[in-house]
Length: 391
Image (cartoon, rainbow, N blue to C red; front, side, top):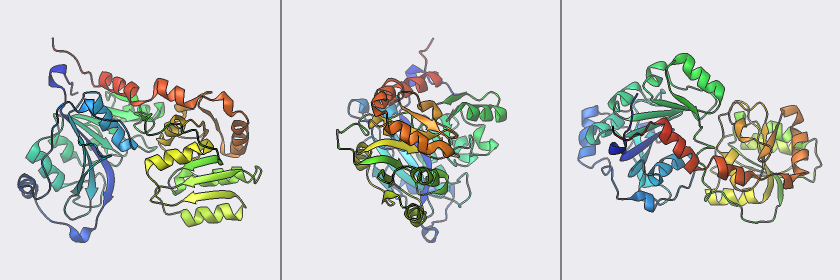
């Protein structure tokens, strides 16, 4: 177990997402040593930057991938932060995230399509510039050799989705802390690694940003909003079947940032004669998502085999209560009498009817502010990392 001390405050945090893009036709073959030389020469991008007192200027905003590293900057855990993703080929891309000079997004060429992802490019970068002090791995993960190269880093994992561990044992054994979305996930982790430290603190709904999502006082033109990918596991069918049992005067908006089921969703809603508007992938910026949520009376989460979706607390911070599927695998801890309610698929229509009839009884934003915005989660994270003063 890596333990951080106050005299050695981490200077850099790296978050590795499992996002990938690019085209294999542009791939460059090379050993770790070759990629290391390319990074040192500047051919693959600039060196990691350190900044002075970033916490004075950082705003914790944006999506769930950005908010944890930004919180680490704001809370003094690091002086710079990077988000690493994967490319199938070509030169790595780099840009600033949310206009923040302290948060850089880089992409690294993958060795192949198999997860957990291996990358000589990433290993070359680590050899060139050293490992980060805090390494966060999300989703499908990275190969064991990346974790071995970062043996002195404090290593954190969160699967993002419903399976507690989406990486093999030879990878998961290297983590110092695994964040889960529900108690059953923590039990699954401990069944594999009995001594592994876990915490029910999914990065999506936790580290919430009260400035990205907030009430705007707009007219409510939709009764229901569902912000979810156009993918089968988001279970739009549960919403549509529920709406078919309610007055056709109800208006619904579905916002889809990605996914390939848009035509099927439109056909389903149309066949049932529902009044549903759709926003297609690639979706809209966060400010527009917030505006659209402000125009709805309630938000819904319909999935079953889903992680704790970030949208749970994002709806709430926008001031709207949430109806969640009572079979949701992770995240029901955010549904309280003041933030919303849960209902089974068969009773989802009754849940919608009930909530629309008593909107004044909810106070979702205040509950999130009191419990799950980033300062609360960061304090918990610091405690879990055992940041201590020297003897």
